[in-house]
Length: 162
Image (tube, rainbow, N blue to C red; front, side, top):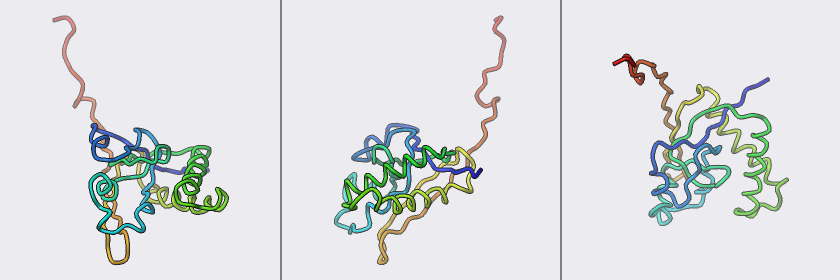
């Protein structure tokens, strides 16, 4: 059985609630979502929309944005549900004629994210950076490897008999 990895939104503080028009919820599955910006120009890059363009992963439940995602295993049933949700989003927001017509595109978007996550250990953090180029939207990814915490770093040592 093949293990598939995808990534979930993770938050270290409340900044995403301030910088994105719609923030992704902690723990929701995410993909790059760069397709949202395929027809954008410099004039579209203002305020919270600019931040979503520059650094936001797309949550597949809220369709909000998150700055950080963490790699983790996804179960086949969850993967199928995310494909269906993204296909429905393509119908509702991008005018795809039907879920059946949108499903191959949704699967491809999620497969690209799974490919990005495939070679990383669980809990590896990812960030995305986008810019407009003459060829369209260019994406770059940063990988922040998970660091195993040593219990001695956080444990309090002493006696309870003091």
